[in-house]
Length: 175
Length: 159
Image 1 (cartoon, rainbow over the protein chains, first blue to last red):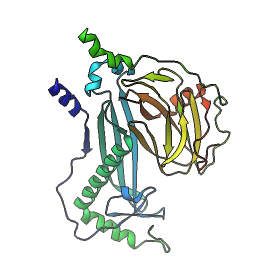
Image 2 (image 1 turned 90 degrees about the vertical axis):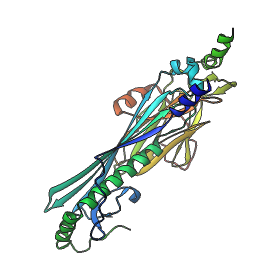
Image 3 (image 1 turned 90 degrees about the horizontal axis):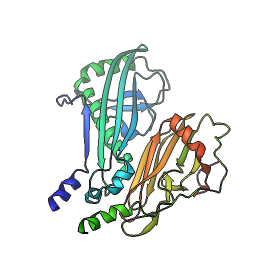
């Protein structure tokens, strides 16, 4: 019985799946500071991306989050004795999709995308923090995009240099 | 007999279920207009199913809980009740806590409308709150059965 309780308790877990698989770690030849249009919390930005207010920035970073819940019928959960031992009563999936697009003369020339699914199997004893799952998924796509940026640093440095020659006066990075 | 005793606690979860209608408050009416620079969040709870008092493993408890927005109490969410929040377009966390916490963070966008549905799940001593973002079509349909609740805090814009 104790073994069953422990195994059921352990079934209340979270997992995180990210695609694409992370490329081998690359150190950029020099620190990148890609100027990107972005609205939102700066903590969700990859390290090499800087949010700017100018709409004609050469890069754009955005993300989208979806929530999905699958719940066991309340009646079944209530009459199932295993519920008291930690049998799962539902599952929560939070999917984050982040994209970084690079533009040259207004045309999209490169697009980086990452998708992360944070999943929690809930029991009677677990909390339901979709906020925490969202934070994990957003951190995963942020780090994945950062890795893709570093792997492609040489190309992006070229884009950044080309864009710097056409920066409109008055364009400032957001604090 | 021993087997019956083993099943008794979970069965008690269903005992004492009562249907309580929310009699106070006007019936649902959508906000007449949406400010273009704000988001609207409807927080509601269906009047159906496990409403009112629910008998738990330990004893009788109510299934009412307070929903917070960015840490401030927004509404004491009764079954069959709703509240409308006119919010700034930004990352906003909604949460509710009994013996467990349910939280969800929404990236509110100006001009958009969101439906956040409150529900309950079985708990040990108290029910667990359950906050779910639902599709517009589902939310707009279900909220029609609800009545307006009083806001829990004057610091939030709840017309």
